[in-house]
Length: 128
Image 1 (cartoon, rainbow, N blue to C red):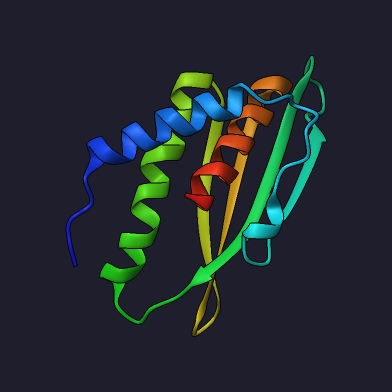
Image 2: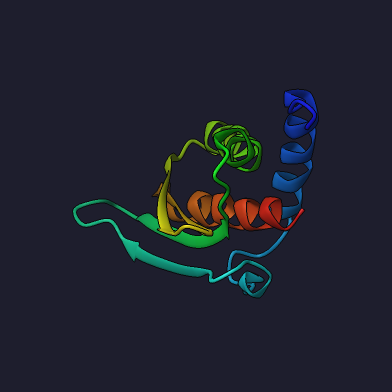
């Protein structure tokens, strides 16, 4: 198994973010290509125009931690880059759904337009 190239991930993330920013925030997100995906959005109480988005999806699990890391490390790199460029807070957590399935939950919070761009970029990146 080859090592993850952070430069390649950054290049893909930059391209993906540019594509996401070029789309309207009201355009539907293509969640159907992600496995068992759901997206929930809610205004942040007590804020002025902030949004909290939660994207949940599954990926195949492996008994080998290196295989799981090979699948999730690029996500961490890309999502960190999106958050940094857009100025949103984010987290990515994983839960073992069953021995063969890992559920990932990506949460982003910040200004509505930026959170939507972050979420759209994340979905696009996961499709790549």
